[in-house]
Length: 363
Image (cartoon, rainbow, N blue to C red; front, top):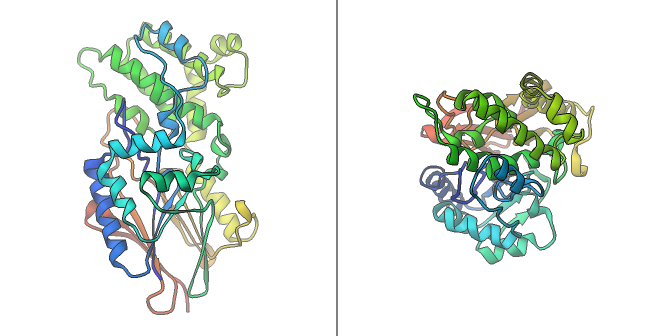
């Protein structure tokens, strides 16, 4: 038995900004799906955030006010249901979407960006859209006596642990408010502005510092007040708007960014505690010999006391600032037991399958 695992594809629709490009990631995904189909009995696991439904939904409140304050001539889009969202994704990503429809054994783990897949009727909606898949919030597989647990990992992140949390609010706001504002505003002279870069930022809160590079001071101050108010109205900020917009400074936001940027380290710490038996995993998962997560968008690999922790990062073009080249890595994890021992092999499909890490359990 072979299990192929990828995480955080973020398929969405062609609108203001996209994280998944059907002509790049879609073609690589199609090649992978063909490979899985040829491998008799193999399984493909999409380890959360396969779809970016939260990016396709506007904030619950305050978007009309945000547009009005910043003179953006745009109407508030409707909040669509799962079948409509899937149809939009399929139209925008014909290569990647069709590829997934041809995988004989496909398992999808709901993440924080596609948590709608954890709701009743989701498997039927997927099937109606053309994709037949098992939906499991926690995947447990045994290979050569080793217990493998695969989860998305947002349960280690307080802001994204539950649907509607602060992370979802920020994603709604970036895609449906900030990007339309930037496209309407346009770039300053002698400054290259890439609105798509905003949604690829990790941590997402780094948008504040990036926009300081792209906007004149007066426009930035106006944007900052409107943006904080939008976030506050949707529960991202705990204090009343009148207090928040008056006292929260850019420096305080930068401090919050620094904390968010440690997510990958905090996730790894919790994962290693679970491997050591010091922490229980969500969804009643057993203590693993290997724990595979995604969510953080940062590749990670550790072997504490002979057990394995892997974070699969993302297939999106991750960036951390206003100008540097994006990370275009496409990580693939292959789990098997060719000689009776559990083996994990991590490669980068963006660079002709270059090996990044490998692990073989002791005999």
